[in-house]
Structure formats: structure tokens, C-alpha cells
Figure 1 (cartoon, helix red, strand yellow):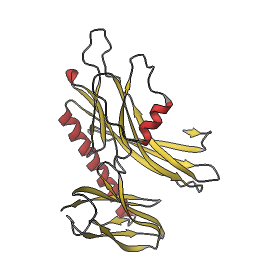
Figure 2 (cartoon, one colour):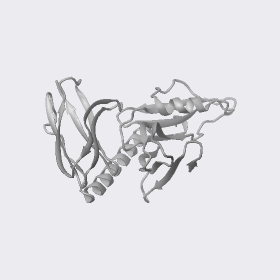
Figure 3 (cartoon, one colour):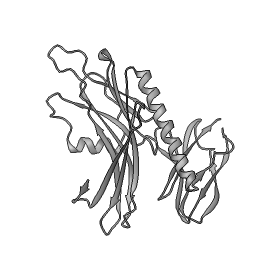
Figure 4 (cartoon, helix red, strand yellow):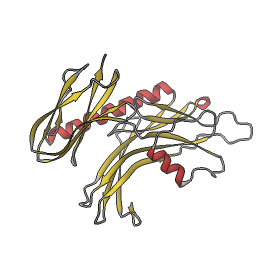
Length: 271
């Protein structure tokens, strides 16, 4: 898809494997203009239309969100239908929003969709025709055309427990595939040591070539709580220090991001 107004080319790739109860969708956005584009968000809008709009219906869509997975889903428990979408390459912030829509499709303006892409809104209570919007960013699309890549999983389930199990399986498979691809190119993000951590810890990473590298720490809502390094690094092994003294107890995600690879590790902070 090419946006002539923005000067952005978006390539969508769908990946599926026989027998797996989920589908991967990857978006790659490249800047085709002569200047950097800042504050860019990538996201998916999903409307499964599982509601029953008959006059006496009591089983319209409901919505929910699983913060640990960044999984937003709609469901009709009476008919055992659960459908979710979650981001895979970064934590869930800005996150996922479940937008209420009227059955005559009069809701859901462009402003609604942009708000859903750029900020987390908890799912509203009650039944309605609901849709899921999952957005990630902001990114800067550089004028050299280097694409920014984001990935999502579409996940179904007959129960909430099955939906979450399928989502966890999708994330695990994607993480393994990403790690194997990175290791093949000699990108590596080492496990945080010590882990758990109460004061400081060491984060090691390896780059196959000299390039920009950014190591950041996010909480499970996807809010960035620390930037450990951000700049040009030589090829080879590097270490940075995570100062956890100001962080509340909990689980965090350490992310290495370069123009060519994104890797994550989890670390637990204890007090």
C-alpha cells in the first residue's frame, strides 16, 4: 500500500503454518520522501463482527485486554467465540483499544482510530459492536528509506483460557524464530545479569556491523522507563548497565533495536 499523501510505502506480509491456531501479520513502513517523518504509528484495525444484532439479542460483543501479552480481544461467550490481536516486536504501549461501534456503523471516525493508535484506552463495559485497534509507536521513518517493521498476531479461541494459551504459543514461536534469525546474523542480546535484580545489572549485546543501536527498558504496559544506550556503536560485543534502584518491583522488558534487528529479554526487579 502506498500513501501518496504521506509519501509512505507499507508492505504487509501474512505468515501462517499448518496446524497453528494463529496468524502472523508483519508491516514494513518505508519513507519515500526527502525528509525524515517523525511521530509515525503502525497498527492494525480488526472488526470480527461476531455480534448478533437481532432485536432481542443479549449476546453482542464484549471486549477485554490482557496487559501482560498486550492482547486485546472481543468475544461472545454464549457462542464460544473469542478473537484477539496483539503486537509482537515491542511491548504493548501505546497498546490496544477496544472501540465501541453502533450496529449501523455510524461510529468509528478517523479521529477515533488515531486515538486508538496513539494511546491506550481500557475496554468499555457492556455489549456493543466492538472492534480492536492495536497501535505501536511513535517511530521516525528516515529519509534513506530504511523500513520500520512491526508484527502482530491474530489469535482465536473457543474459551478465554484457550485464547490466552494460543496467544502465548504465538508469542513463543515468534520469539524463537526472531532469535534464530538474529543469531544467524550474529545479532545477540544476552540475558540480564543478575536476574532478578534489586540494584544494578549488566546487559550485554553483540552487533555484526557498526550501526545505530538502542537499548531500552519497558514495563509490561509498554511504557519506556529507561534508555540504556542510544547511538552509533562499533561491531562486536558491548555492555551497558541497568540501574534498577528507581524501578518498582515487577517484570520488565529489555529491548535491543537496530535498523536490522529487534531482540528482547525479560528482567525481574525485586525490592
